[in-house]
Image (tube, rainbow over all chains, first blue to last red; front, side, top):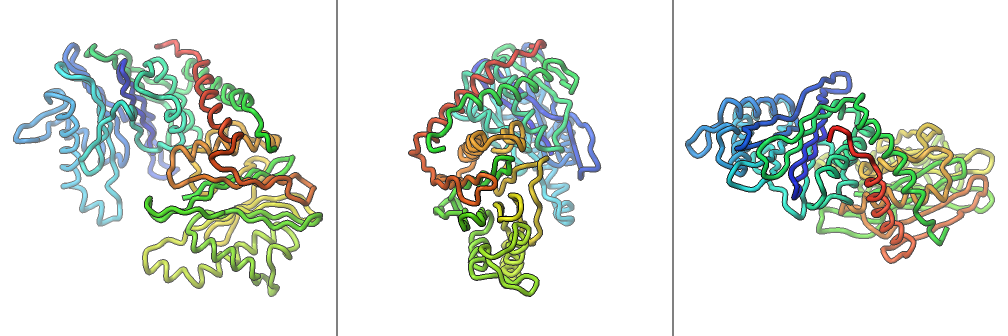
Length: 243
Length: 243
């Protein structure tokens, strides 16, 4: 399994991904699920992948080699804008489905993959998309400014309650880490270390790219404090008058 | 879908269930999922059901009529103890599977049902079990003093972080309501009103049985305050020093 979360805020974009891949509980490994394309001053495009690792690696390799779309071959370094980038990821997904789909189906393996792609290319605003296994995709909006991939349920309540487009990047980093922590605690197939990337709107360079492991003092403090803050928050609630 | 949570604490037992049943998003209805058997001074046994409504209603009807186990026919009013009660629920589940399983399988409908059963019968301690669709079951212990049925993920992090066997009933009521609120917000197929039952250890009578609707002032206050308490808890977290 996997847990990735991406937020599209007025201030910029926040991406956080775990790194655990598993085939059964007795076969786990660490694979980075985040890739960054950066051409300073011109573009930053970040992808995060979830689903069948063989599929998502194939998609990312095809993207690196170049994928044909509308008669032209592009990579994420050459696409003219983010919408085109999302379409290119979709085209790569469909190309993998065309080559692998039947063989997977013959062995009852479902074609599971989803990819978040966000960033900014000079000339347009920052954007964030989520591409499905069929190659179609949706875009984050002001109403719903975040996407989650993979094991999304444990970490969703805190995001639902707090996140909106005016959430600051500093707040969003903490929220993403809390959301991830809830998921790490509840699903063994989501695991450390984490990959974090921050992009500030209109800067066309990565503001922060960091791998966070279990020893990271700041993450440890957030995990511990959040537990006690939750318990205190809970204690502050009034008792129902019918008890 | 459904969300039910049952807690087995030193002080007693807390049961909370939603009441929404749905077949697709355009066919929703209210069905109570909780049943209480009370013989004051002698026994209290509470059941909560999740899964296919036709299956769980059949199971409950069979239990009301009497189910054969070890050559004797019992209902929850006559079983000698809680272990026997859980076995009886399992036997009812297997009887429904024997009559309906093949017909459901022929139409690719999976046999989905789970039932929490807890309470106390004079002569033994309070106990809490979760019965699976195959009629087998597990019991809550001091290590894991709660069970969730149905859509359990959204409401699990708060329970994981706060609940232990020494949690008081008053605390557990609030925790169950918070856990339910997170689920209500995230899954449309879990819905109000809620059914709550409280049993205090060694009393052999129901301490509180209450239906909670959206207008309930205490539940409204808890929902509102929890949102703001969470936001404050989150704001109290320190900023990672690498941001």
